[in-house]
Amino acid sequence: MLLPVETVILRTFFEKKNSQNKRMTLLEFKKSSFLPSIELLSNLKEDINLTRSIFSYKHYYVMYCRFWDLDLNHDMKINFQDFQYFNNSSLTRVMCNKIVKNFRSERGFRNRKVAFQDKSKIEAEVDDEFLTFGEFCFFLLCNEDKKKDTSIEFWFRCLDTDADGILSLYELKNFWEEQYERMLCINFPDPWLFDDFICVLIDLIKPNDPFKITILDLKKCKKNTELFLDMIFDIRKYEHHIKRNHPEFRDQDDIYICNSGSNIKIALDGWDKYAEKSYDEMMRVESRRRQTSNNSFSSNNSYNSSQEQNDYNLDNMEWSSNLYNGGWDDNEDHQHNSNEVVQDFTSTQA
Ligand SMILES: [Ca+2]
Ligand SMILES: [Ca+2]
Image (cartoon, rainbow, N blue to C red; front, side, top):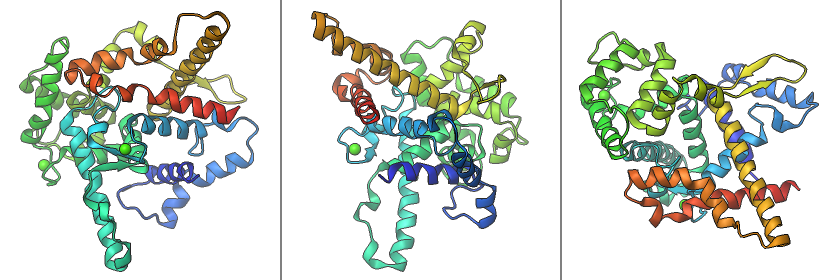
């Protein structure tokens, strides 16, 4: 199966500077975590799933499940319609559209280069708008690790719609308008007007020129850049930032781990934290499903699998129906895929 290999390659490239360049120099390869990860594998005394290296099967599994959730017809492509349902429709439509279009342009550029060298390799699908598995994984890493340079470059390319290297007020307003509408739609507490948002943004980023935000401005203060990005196009993550102001929520939300042979606790962040949480959630759902099916078999318990799926997706339904006028009702297939793939995975592990 090539997909786990693809994620290892992709994660190696994700770490390097200028990740848009799909070639790696020897120096970049030596600086990457590929060789240390290989060394770790050769000395590994514990389950590979307990590591958080680029070879973690658990991390691959989370990526694959999230992809499977959205790829309804399982043709290994996520089209724009399906992509809008990512993370309970958390991203604005305008941003989803921009992400899909940017990947299409990059794919088209690569294909044109290949076609120039070898005309027999022209791909007919060059103009289609979809994400491949590798593109989706790259997006997922950028979405969960917004403080990394690669992610900031990715999101900057999306926001800088005229590609002049500057985020203008006009561009920011185009993205903000939909986010503001969504806040009103779900009765978000204290939605910001655009002028207030810009004042907050300037306080957060402190650009050299308040009317021209550059990528260097964003890279200077990565933590605040993450908040700015979530504020402008990701309503669930923005809400999460607000909730984390409460100590009780923070205590519940934080995840700590101890490396093997050490009692020192390390707080997980970014992609590592997301992967850990997602995996636990999937395993919990699967465990409850198995318990339920055992109970049903032995005592005709009335608690059934559809109720199980509703537990898992209740949050999805509330958000999405508010945001997109009941979109889940028309697309309820989106709610069932994770359970299917969890079953597949656990049966292959058994
Ligand atoms: Ca598909
Ligand atoms: Ca621009």
